[in-house]
Image 1 (cartoon, rainbow, N blue to C red):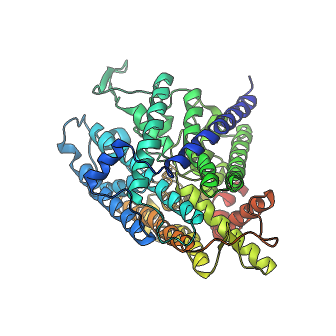
Image 2 (image 1 turned 60 degrees about the horizontal axis):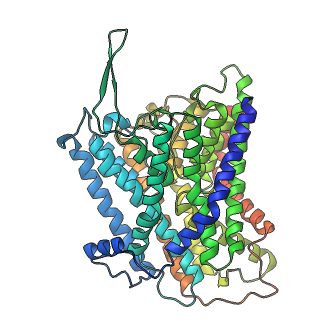
Image 3 (image 1 turned 90 degrees about the horizontal axis):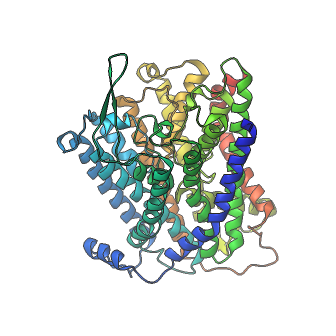
Length: 549
């Protein structure tokens, strides 16, 4: 079988799996967040944290709960990272420096999973399991909760509350992420992913040197790493490591895990707002951008195989060009950030495309929860622009998109570019940060731009040439991760509060339909134009200049 045919069949299999899961998973998530009953295990959690599950919160209280919960998570994880060398089961872990520990704690709480350390060396098995894996669950659930709050606000009329954060958080973990992760971990185990509690194995090689091979609870972490669009690898090589991703079948399955919840959430959206067509429209928007990213990345890497360097540089032979390209486009189109190849070694066009996936704002289809509310913001901007063009008051699902709503949406769009461009410029203007670049010229610019785009979009992948484990990059990337996660969340929750308190207007002949292919095309154009106008100069000096040279 030719490589091209194998690649096209891989894409076909992915589309089939996503289509089969779209309806049942989307419907289940809608039921989870609209169910008036509480499961017994959930009631136990509510009693322990002293929460009334039947009370609801306004947007300010909801936002305060998000921030308080996340702040506790950062402090607790930082303490665990710093103290890991004093805990049992260290297994030779070297631990982390202070700024690396700060970076790691913020990284995993913000669902970024940027790793300035080597997974198997910098993190002990206890930290991997008790600290990082737990945050993989709860950080994904926080994003899911915020997205559900926004959807609930669109569906309600003249309401003061948008839900209960603690109920949304617990249900997301107990009813969605844990069961799905257990099933995924079992399938990964069947596929050959490692899961054990034994210590490192020392192998005496023919050269006389000893090689240390580490195991661990890899399959369970790998499952939620992909399913929760987290991305942090148990090993330094991430999903290129054979213990995390041993063969082409597990590779396809891991790509599926990245995409399944973000895409299915669009059906959840349609069901919760009472119009399934709205969910299809948002799903079509995300699918169009994802397909474009996969097509361009794959074409760029396959075409590069005829060049002098060859497109297999930085890629695993067992995955090939297609398997690596599809994985790269999917991990940057979501906020996962896991890698099964080195993006640094991609062709200029291929590397530029995976960078472009992130600067679009992670909406193709984006992360768990964060992707959905990012797509809704794009839809609101599309409605606003269309209203200006025809001279009508913009409306979306019967809600007026006025000054307050547009302000929230506009600020949401501005946060990430400001963080990325200011941080990149500051790094390139200083001798110390510039010395951490492996390459110079356009490729060196791309290394730094990619790092900050990854951090501000809570993606976590990297152009591997940048030496980021130093105080400057550890702290500036941590700031980008923190602000890139929670400032947009606060704006989304404020937007939800404004939308929830509005009455719903009935649709009229003059109401713009937001479920048609025309609207999907308009929203896609808005997303591309906003990202293009913002980042084209930087991209032109980086990957575009490298490609033209």
